[in-house]
Amino acid sequence: MSKSMEELQREVDTYIGQFKEGYFSPLAMVARLTEELGELAREVNHTYGEKPKKSTEKEKAIEEEMGDMLFVLICLANSLNIDLAKAHDQVMHKFQTRDKDRWTRIEEGGKNNEDN
Image (cartoon, rainbow, N blue to C red; front, side):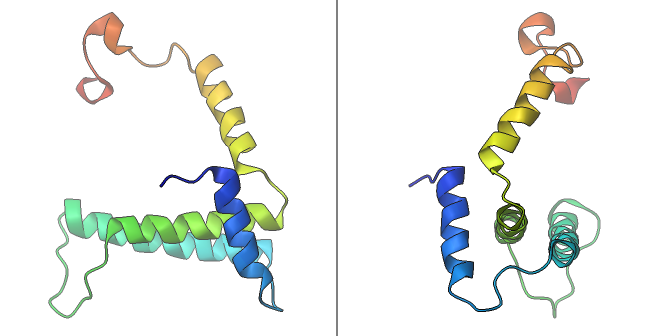
């Protein structure tokens, strides 16, 4: 079952709200987001890059690392009272206006972006 961004933000807020410590500071969460990005990059490199895992390394899924990043991003947004659905809408509007002619559309050139 899919959840809306509002539901995700509310679920994380309910989870964090049960602890006295609450959300970490924004700076600490950005550092944690950077750490999680590094873990995601490592998994992508192991899966699609030239660096295979060592036999002693635990197998982790890219999906799990993306979930970790999403959780921390939601924590950061919640702590700053940012509605991520609204932020997404603002970014999509920017892409659909400012960058609307930046890429070759499939119906125009018969290609997708990977062919460019």
